[in-house]
Amino acid sequence: MQESIEQLSLVLGTVKYADGSDEHKFNCPFCEANGHGKDNKWHLYVNPKKEKWICFKCGERGSLDQLLQKLGIEKGAPVINDDEFMKLAKQLEFGIHDEEKLNDVSPSEYPCEVRPVEPGSSAYRYMKYVRGYEYKEFADYKLVYGEFMFSSRIFFPTFDMDGKLCYWVARKIFNDSDKVAKYVNPKAEKLNVFNLNRVKGDHIIICEGVLSAMAAGPEAVAIFGKTATKQQIWLLNSIKFDEYIISLDSDARKEAFSLASEFINRGKKVSLVELPEREDPDSVRKSYKKYLGLRTPITDSELILGGLS
Ligand SMILES: [Zn+2]
Image (cartoon, rainbow, N blue to C red; front, side, top):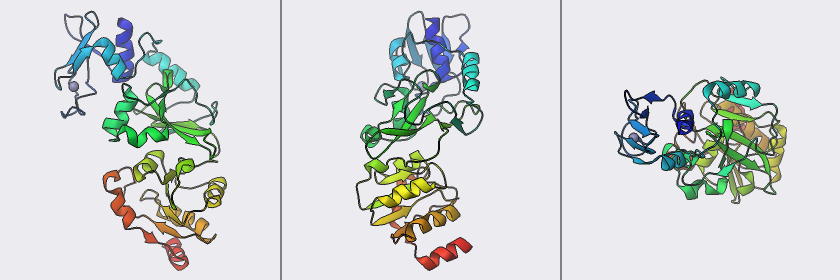
């Protein structure tokens, strides 16, 4: 049963031993979703001998098996402690940055076994409670989560027009350590565009990141950054949309105009979604439709002015 505790501490962070008992204490990951404040006083008690757990703040409780299942931990899965994890992490040059590119992995296959993000996994709870999505809103994106060093990550897959996996971005689920990169992705040239294979309408919304694209809706795609590669621009231009809506983060105004020119030069209708300072489509998700409705068409002359300002 000690193994279960080690597995739990990998997901929940530092474990504390309750004095004079078999119990182990963690900060409860469910309190916020249960309408209580964030737990930082170790309210979740696990008794590995009795195989039970309870949170004395939000009241959630159950069997040890249920807790493992809720957190997406496979019972009996190999335990990697922090030291081993960091060693593995270093081997993969996995590290201290916000975004990390992995040299040794292929963009067209996952670097580990993966499972769909379905109820019962911590990945599901993350999408539902932290990001605020209903299952039906993200099911079509075919999100998966990984194992071992990727067990606390959700993969956001990009498919080519034939529906074949061609790129992925893996985001960490728990924001417990700044030492672990928030996003990791294969070190490969950006050839494709997230969610482009699913955009069926007469317009397309172009965002920076995958979560922004999801926030902007099924007609939105992500170019994985503030600038698009030649290949991505070619791809976007090769499909006929009546309107190209540029919706980068608010700090990328210059890049937005530059991207707009790529479509205007080919005779496309282009408009720009403007967001308040320091916001992106994901951070304003609940009111994104309002900003989308207020988008400004960009004409040639405005484009020149925009580039100059
Ligand atoms: Zn709780």
